[in-house]
Length: 123
Image (cartoon, rainbow, N blue to C red; front, top):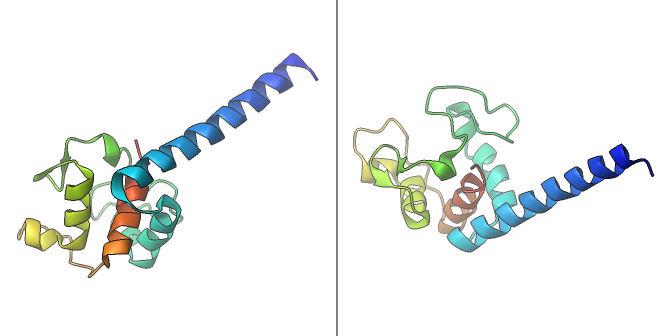
């Protein structure tokens, strides 16, 4: 094989490994499945208000974009960014901040953990 091709293969495999490691870390942090969470974000209509990397059609700006949400200090501008707080926010945003425009989507515990796990892959 040519050196350039080998280097390209190594980069591809490294990217896949990083993605897998990121998903494993997020799943361990939140107790959910990031792959299911990505689908649930679409099912629950998160993409109608947020730009969400990796979610087709999620490119609107009603709510804040969710790129790099895992690296932010606060969730919704009011909660320290921790896995438990992310799950709490997703389950009942108005219960945390009555002035938020984000509705309570009545997420199940499992869906909230899955979506939080996906969001924690967005570093």
